Image (tube, rainbow, N blue to C red):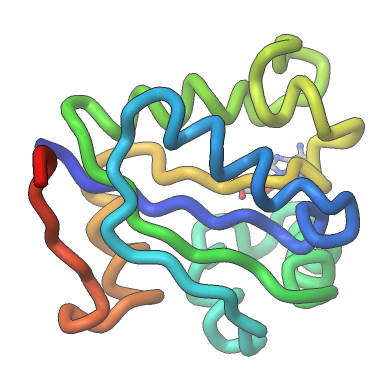
Length: 143
Ligand code: CMP
């Protein structure tokens, strides 16, 4: 079982598609084991996007991520990191396909609605940035 971190960005509230985005992951069979709505601090956003500091889109990316609330969550499943990235769609707006969250709801690479960890290392780093261990709700299927 793999855990991955997902952040639904402020655009999901502006577009009223929180439920739609969440249901894409649930319908696939991924398990929500932590979920919260947050107003992020600049410190947390800068830590989250530290690898992009210095890129031409960085300041605007931070500004967008702070422009409203986000949903932070941890999803669990076999190969969850890869599955969630496929459901989210490609980062580049010219490449994300209809049927993916970005392909269906994002018209700009920077305003791309959803963030998903890209490796086990980034999943573990991002999970610990956003969640305390006691915020994870481990539950079993079948009851
Ligand atoms: P995300 O998956 O949250 O990770 C980094 C974010 O930077 C990415 O989604 C986009 O929102 C943004 N981003 C990445 N590349 C570009 C780009 N070329 N132009 C604008 N924004 C970008």
